[in-house]
Length: 466
Ligand SMILES: Cc1ncc(COP(=O)(O)O)c(C=O)c1O
Image (tube, rainbow, N blue to C red; front, side, top):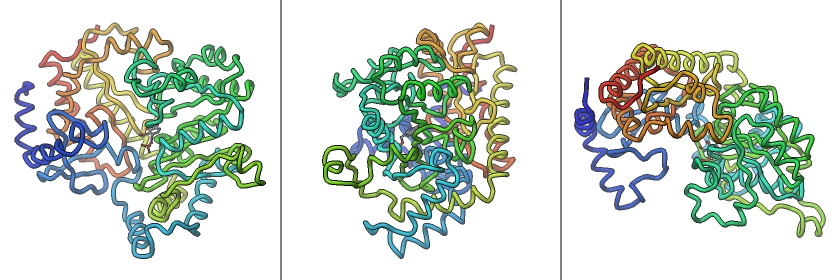
């Protein structure tokens, strides 16, 4: 079984050109990377091609891919119908800075598929972070209130307000240099699944919106409870479906849980691989983008341009994907769930057989189209393992979770072992799936799971189950 040293040597041996590129990149980018999740030690792999469920790097290594363009692809890379849509568009116009028939078609498809948009309106942005910031601003204008409620520990993109909740525990305090106190004053961070905490905050009467980061572990009761409480207290309920949209189900987490928010934020899949974001939902809220009389336009209306908003190159791929979803939803989602269930089950059975404290957690738990690998670096009593299956339900839970989380060494070794085995995911722990894996791809992934768990056990980097 490989030692850490052997795993490192194998990684270096397999990736000489990536190493060279990383050395050049270090002279260009902070830490040599363009996205936090692409940072890897000793250096990231540099990809040259991706097709279906596979990706190839500059050194000619082939990977079964679970990054899927950070979740932008449910049909795998380079689906020929989507590629054709891009190819047809490029010679006509990438961008015209005008309204187009394409944008009307794109919005009509969104309205057909996404519950929040069905009777409402839509506005395009360049990315999910921007759409989240706009949704928060719209909710503040609509309610004439300031505060926002965010779930602890989740990522809603790069905006000041939501970034406060991302790092922790303690939440709202880690990595927050550069976020002004004025912004901090208006953010209320709540633990998952704690309706009482949400109601207490809503009862102050100054909450504009409650944000739900949908690709996380919540109980159905919590999601439905948020819908009910936001209605009761007149706050806007925003579902962040940047990842769960078109993935949990065709209509996202809204369809999966049967809950329709006031606003939904979309991204990723809706661009078919191109940069995109969307805010959709109630007419009376999106109406703050509408032009009316002079007083309204000057003092009330939200001002918003956006060079890339719904320009042809950003939406032709999304149009193709949505057309495929409408035709094939009956096979796409059962296939995604089947793959997620199989891989999480394989990982968890292997961990159990080896008697180690590791768990793959599916999102959504029962029907995953994405999942995370979690390693605990010490023996864990079974009553603590629930944290990895149901999500933390109090701030105390987050501290316990943090305490049990393996040090970076376990994640480092896991990344090396999986990448050396030809399986690539974000940081080695975050897996996003597509429909295109073959039986061989899945077997290769299961074999890689066995290799990594054994390596972690034999290098004493993982706890044993009690
Ligand atoms: C749930 C969620 N919301 C928002 C964002 C931000 O989207 P973007 O990267 O398009 O700005 C992300 C990005 O990964 C995300 O995962």
